[in-house]
Image 1 (cartoon, helix red, strand yellow):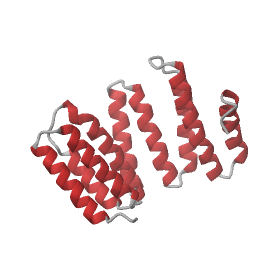
Image 2: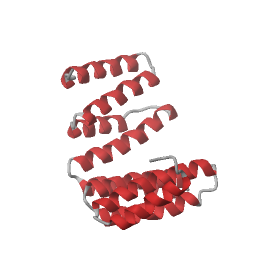
Image 3: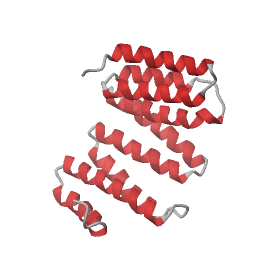
Length: 189
């Protein structure tokens, strides 16, 4: 059956409030995470934006920091879905600059991948393709990750990139990236 989004939202907010009273960060994060997912799936992007901004203002220790990072990513996605592409890209650029400054190349690459999704969502296919192409090269050079993980991540980027090339009506370029994936994993249709 259909989910009553209003009731579910209310219940998840109550669940989060109870978790805060119990000082249970894990339960709080779980409740808010489910709430954001529910609203996003139901295309309630303005509400997702509002909740993400609430999360970013929360006081807490290091245990809440990863959740704030997730909230920043969801904030960027909800802004993009609302057509606020410039705001979403500015947010991503600031996050990427922060990762660069911290010399956290893995985060920088993950955030850049999300920026590529926003560019694609906005119909900026050439910019997205250029970004994804550069990410494939950068992933290959990551030294602190096992080769298998690098290959898997590069394959994921290649798959996304092939979709961008299809969006651009460049079937040859899309096929080139799919062939590269197929060469590594012939059993994967």
